[in-house]
Length: 256
Ligand SMILES: Nc1ncnc2c1ncn2[C@@H]1O[C@H](COP(=O)(O)OP(=O)(O)OP(=O)(O)O)[C@@H](O)[C@H]1O
Image 1: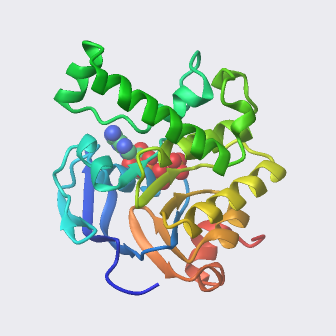
Image 2: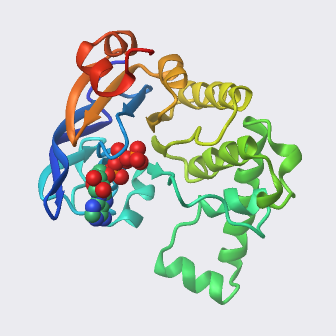
């Protein structure tokens, strides 16, 4: 890991009424790394992701991605730059196949694209075939090809989470932000997810992972940011963060 950071967050802040949800948060994501964000419920983790990806406007601070300012850009401008995210709530689309769900992650909603799709022009069909081929390639990479034609809603939670990762990769990001990818998974499924995320990172995609599963965080991360009540209370390698008394008191508890 060397060179300038892939993502730089400087002094981000946002209040909702009287609640300072994110308070002067700064951190970086290095190329080819996994950066985790942990903290108690309500610590501001999802709001921080929303501020980085343009879903919520910050009231202070700025963000740079790959050396260019991205503060103020609307969410749909970020995937073409190489920044993708998944959502805690927006899961796979039921009624669509796994392949179709993955293809959704690769669409570029430009005006020209909507026109060529709407009119069924050759360009639209060509892009459709390219997206389908890319989806199959990703499903092979994640060893999910046997599920390609299945209805996404019929799959076990562990497989659905992996398909969400595939969908996040479909647009060819340099950085993928994952909001609680292990939510609802058992130990075996979490282990599989961990292997997949490692392989994704080794393949040149950096990750930001919000998670409550500390085992996963410790296994996966190069650096961990800890939030409490909107503020950074620790930032460093996983082992140092785990042993930090402030983190133990605010989040991990005596049993961790
Ligand atoms: N749109 C909103 N309007 C009002 N308050 C909000 C809004 N979004 C977040 N908050 C508040 O901001 C604080 C941070 O919430 P956030 O969801 O970012 O925390 P979190 O760390 O992601 O929590 P969890 O682990 O439970 O997902 C909370 O007090 C929450 O109630």
